[in-house]
Length: 286
Image (cartoon, rainbow, N blue to C red; front, side):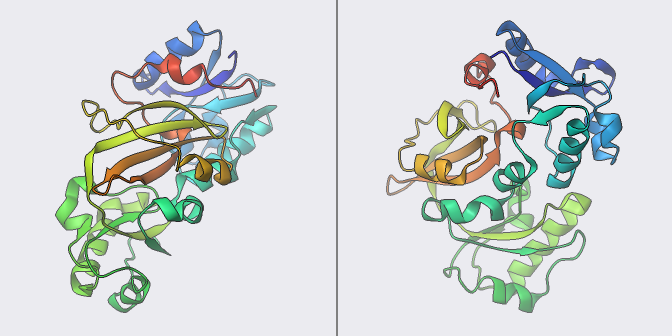
């Protein structure tokens, strides 16, 4: 600090930060930083210029903390900001690399479940033959289905979990339901990951420029507080080369800490009870 953080405006009061990020905005200002607001709804509707019309010109380098956006939307945001003399600290290729599984998987392959993926258009699930070919590298047994960014874990049996990946009929049914439920929000394509059993809940670790700066519970289970070991994960994070990421970690039954998911830190949620200042203190000026 001091830095400028882009945050999402409240849709009902565009001069005020979205309530979900209000505590974070207070922390930024208390640390001497500043907050600039973007219109996330306009960005989603394809009007990137309108989305940034309240962002002051010539701010220099800024960071983003707000609602999730697609890689295409992020690229559009970075472009219109650049025309206003504002540079995103995380470039579009860095955002996509951390945000979508195909971007980070090879770097983390030794510490995350074996996975395969297939580009897929919204509303068009792959056929059974294509899926059977896709999952051949995976071991026989259970698997998880998701898109490049998110799963439908709350629809576990119908759109996420496959008891045996070699049961192509069941695999196709789960993939088809995932594609249906995701609709136009399907991100990139289909991912199939070998299922692993974990103990003790997930932890979320935040990394800035390759260094772990904050560790705590996963936002879905803020009452569960595992204490992850990051030594085996750190070389992968540094090799990925992204400025601001999160890793969701869980401990396998054999005691090994595994990467369940990786994400761009700009759009990863803080768990309830976390102190935002602990995160923002770690932000470099540029």
